[in-house]
Length: 206
Image (cartoon, rainbow, N blue to C red; front, side, top):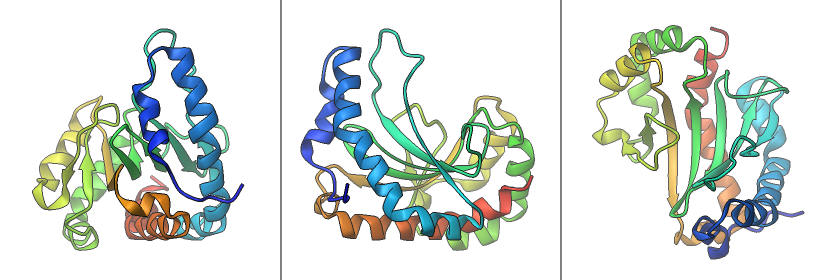
């Protein structure tokens, strides 16, 4: 399918009661769009990452009672899984779309990556625009702008705390008109991935 953007119904998916009902809506409304975004971006993602990247779409398979509050797709060099590797994400909460470079708690080399970023902190701060955002927990709908984040403290926490995470990228509000313009949104996703790619490439071989 050609990607034409997201609609209000995609975001109200997360207001549907019941695990089965919400999962059915995610599968029917949102997951095909994740596939369509990847289909349009695949060659660019490979070039940005410097290697072949594979699409993973969150299945929420471990959930038995509570429906997911967000959902996402991930781009990773590992075909079998993404959680133990640096990866890119495009996904939705009820109030925004997110585009992340993600380092989540299952990553086995968190300390080494954090230490490398701490050594490179000056160049990282120059790379990241002030309106980009940083999250320290992918399970919470919380993020602060780069301008309002103490990057050093965030990276030190990422290094020292077992469950700490580090995600950096962009949030786009659910009512932003760009989300309904597939072509323009693809451009914005691509630009975001280009911006955070130096961090990805710096961390991928650790």
